Amino acid sequence: MGAGGTGRGRGVRELRAWGAAHPQAVDVGIALLVQAAMTMPFVVPRPPDLEPATWSAYGLTTLTVVPLVWRRRAPFTVLLAVLATSGLYRLALEGPGQPLPYTGLVCVYTFALLSPPRARYAAGLLVALSVPVSVWLNTQSMRELTFSLFVFGAAYAFGRLADARQREQRAATEHAAERAAARERARIAREMHDILSHAVSLMIVQAEAGPVAVRAAPERAEAAFEAISSAGRDAMVQLRHMLGVLRDGEPGGPAAAPRAPQPGVGELPELLARVRGGGLDVRYAVEGTELPLPAALGATVFRIVQEALTNVVKHARARSVDVLLGYEREATGRPGRLTVRVTDDGRGPRGEGSGGHGLLGVRERAAAHGGWAAAGPGPKGRGFEVRVVLPLEAG
Image 1 (cartoon, rainbow, N blue to C red):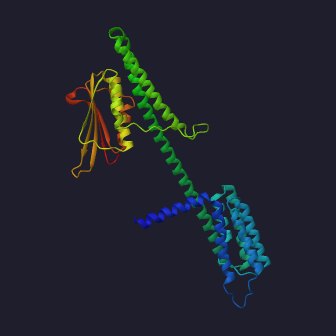
Image 2: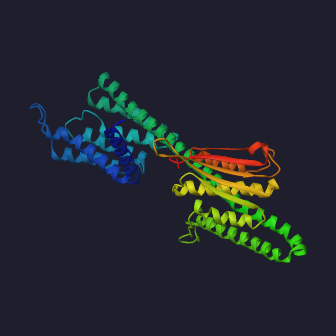
Image 3: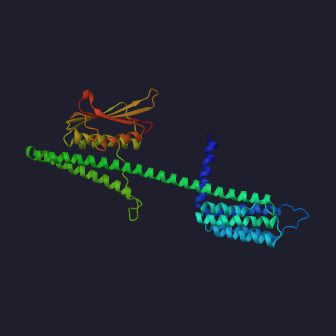
């Protein structure tokens, strides 16, 4: 679709949004439009054999239109008022006729759109009885009766179709909101898992090594306890930030929740240093020309490495682990992809479920950026490797 079509579509959406936000203004505009249509017979010259239009007839016509301003608030009452003023106009005055019963059509459309079934049936019965009476008072012709029933039936059908469309749109909006909430819950679950699992795993490893260090090398015991304290403090800080964001906007919550930037590739050395403090030999390398990453992609790389290292600490019984970031460019020189490898020398492949939700979270994070993740035996079948490929442009 061209730019003109896109602009028109956006304009229609903006107009609908404005109308939804200002329903009273829309009703006043409809009443003015109907009044303009009903004014036409009074300004167009009449044949000489007909009496001239009078100001009293025009005033009564206006009185017929005025109730439309409240059509949303009390559609059935407005319908009764319109029928009463229209009947008074037809019985008491000899004014110019109208090509269409504008006010009645607007009322029928409105109660078909807004009223519950019982009110719709009552209003429909009232209109079905009023139309033949109006035709009998006017021309007493079958042609006018057929035409009137048709246009009122069409107005009712359009109202029901509009109601069905609005219900469908509301259902789609609610479904989209539920999906967005589910995605947000999954994202929060991943963040909580990454923060707590990593910190608790390091604390467990250090706590288990502490008694041995106290007996064999007391000077190492102090370092182990400091690592436990550091991991706990770091986890508490990150949890406070996350919970602060979740509470932001709640009644009684903070006016402005603290928002620390998400960790990125620049924070990897600090993460690796904490893991080294647990006794694991961690080697870090970068291949290719390092490129600046968008914040979201950088946070994803950090969380992937964090989760992979957590699984090594919890499951691998490894002595060393290699973390490699490989930047690749396309032949044209444009950014290509980033490969993340975390390889340990531990006990080799574990069962599919041994990693809990960790490896699933790694795959979800990679997929969110258009990439993929794989896990399995390391080089030559030794150890375990997590490999993630992320398109840089997608990030």
